[in-house]
Image 1 (spheres, one colour):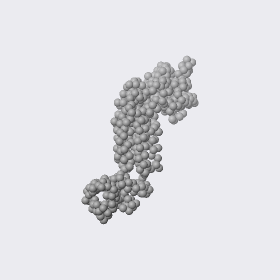
Image 2: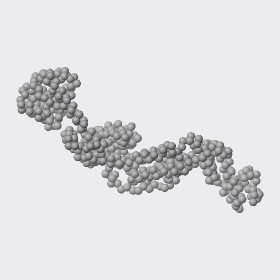
Image 3: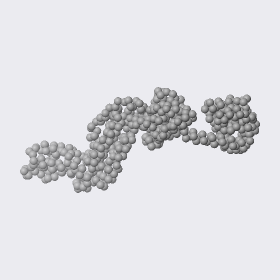
Image 4: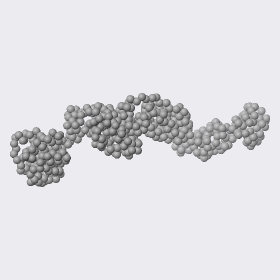
Length: 510
C-alpha cells in the first residue's frame, strides 16, 4: 500500500515510519505533511491508498481535512490518531469511513492490526473496482453479455462518473492483412485519444479475429466536434501510420445497452470502402443515407476473361479484374451487389476452364474465393482473391506436362484446323494454349510424328485437293482459301507434295 502521514509532530512521523517498515517492508510511505493544506495538495497529487491523520492537525482540523477529501470523491482508507477519544470525534470518524481510531502513543500491535484491516479493505475495493471497471463493463457490453443492474450502475456512477444511458461513440479501425504489422501501434495511439483530444474519454479494445481495433468514446462534450476531430486529426494520422491500409468507421449510440448492436452496424458498413472509395472515413449515418445505384459492368469483360483463362494469361486476367473494379463501374453501388457480381464472374471463369479441360478442382477454388469475397472490406482484397483463384483453377505446369499431353496435341490440331488458312504460327498457337512454343512443338511431334509446319502444310494441301475436285474455282481463288500468299507458290508446294501441278491433279482425278 502507498501511505501518507498527516501529523504535525516530527517525532511521531519518524516513529510511525519505523513501525510501518517493521510491520511490512512492502508498505510504501510516499509522503508526510504537517498541516491541512499541504496534506490536501499531497494527497490529490499522490493518490495514496491509506492516509494516517492526526485529529489535532492544524489546530484540530484533521477530521475536517478527511471530510474535504470525501467530498472530492477520494475514498482512500484512513486511520485516525488522537490523544483523547471523544465520542463525537469517534462518531464523525466512523461516518467518514475510517478503518480505526488509534490513541497516542501508538503501539506496534494496535498499529499492525489496524494496517492489516486497512489492507484487506483496500484489496477488496480494488477487486471490486477491477470487476466493475468501466473498461470491463464496456467490453462485456460489446460482446452482448448481461446488461448493467442498479448495483453496477451505481458503482460506475460513483467510481467513473459514468451514466449507462449517455451517448457513446464507436470508432473502428480495420487493418485487414496489415493487422499484425500495425495493430499494436494503432491500439497504443487510440488509447491516448481521449487525453489528447480533451473532447471525450475512451476505452480501447483489440479484436484479432476481426483484424481491427475498436475504441468506445464516452463523456462526449460535443457530438459534432467529436466527428470533426476524428475526421481531421485521427484519420489522416492513421493513413500515414498504416501506409493507407486502414479503413476507419464511426457511429454514435444511445447507452451501453445498444453497444453490441451499434458495433455490429459499424462492422457492417466497412465494406462500403469498396464502392465509396479507398481511405474514406465511413460515418454510419451518412452511409445509410446514401442513394445507391444498380451495378452494370461491361459485358465484353466476360469474353476477355474467358480468353485470359484459355491462354493462361495472368496479366490479362488481372487487367480484367481492374476493369471490373473501375470506379465508374462500382462507385455508389451496394457492396453486397458487387460481391455477388464477383461470384457470378468467377463462375464464368470456372466454366471456361472446365470447358477447355484445364480445371483443377483439387484446390477447392470456389470455396476459398467465396469466403474471401464474403469477408472482403476493400477492392484490393477481392482482386487478390481473384488472383489466387486464377492460380487455383489452373493445373500446375507439371500436371499439364504429365497428364494432359494427349489433350494438348488434340487442342493444337483443332486450332490448326480452324486457323491454318489465316497464317497461324507456332508461337501464336502456343500463346493460345498457354504453353511455350518449344514445349508445344515437342508435344505435337511426339503425339503425331510430324512438325507443326508439316501439319499446317498437310491441312492446306488437303484443302487445295478438295477445292480442285469439288469446285470450278481458279487457282488464285483456291490459293486464297487455302491460306497461300499467291497461286504460284501454292503450285510449287503442291507439286513437291503430290508430284504434279494443281491443274494436272484436277484433270487426272475428275
